[in-house]
Image 1 (cartoon, rainbow, N blue to C red):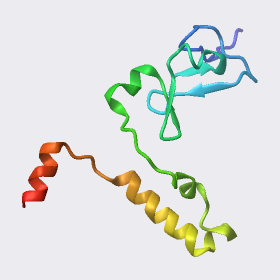
Image 2: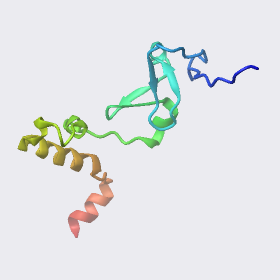
Image 3: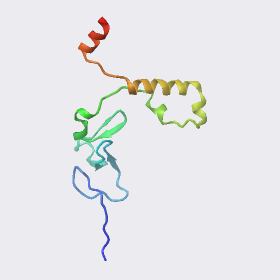
Image 4: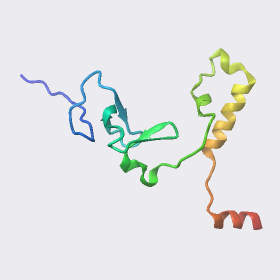
Length: 112
């Protein structure tokens, strides 16, 4: 009796992704590509996450957050007990959750 296997296929070159091949995965649609296909596939790193060309169009908002690394640290980690790490996490949260405004929206806010 044959067994059914689920194999990943590179969404760019359409070749099989073997165990041990370095890959990149889109954060939204979870398609997978070989790392050697990264540039020609137009994958891009936005906000420290990888996105395929399809998902980049209008689905991802580019944000500047130099403190994003602070979100990855555990509260139990002894280094986090430092007050500066807690402050960086607060700033990172504010930058991640900030809203973008059009010029019209800003003018409306400033005249209110």
